[in-house]
Image 1 (cartoon, one colour):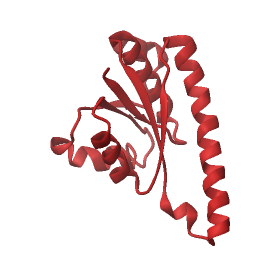
Image 2 (cartoon, rainbow, N blue to C red):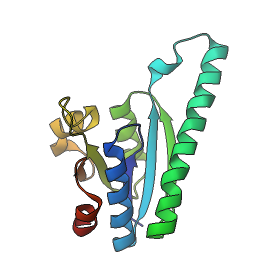
Image 3 (cartoon, helix red, strand yellow):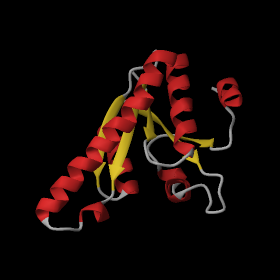
Length: 151
């Protein structure tokens, strides 16, 4: 089964990327894999403190994931899978794609603020020609109604 890989983070545009991935998966008989990456700088403390912070970060991610997962199951009939990785975002994202041959499309949300579309979108579009899967970039400003029409 082809999976849509979407990144879970704390950005507003993440919501549209999640919606798009779930709707596309529902319409095409695919699945959704949700990837959350914990950056290494969060654990630059003593080992005991770092372990506690890592556990707390994983717990926050799992709670956040459950909100999206419930919506996907209830509204789209899609049961997503959560993957949590630690490291630098772009290398970890690419490693996940390489390690899971069922991933067919990467779905990213693009920010609408003056800071640009976001670091992942910026870095990955620079190397779009060498990526192992197609990338769908979902505008953060797209309405729910328009999102439903295009997916």
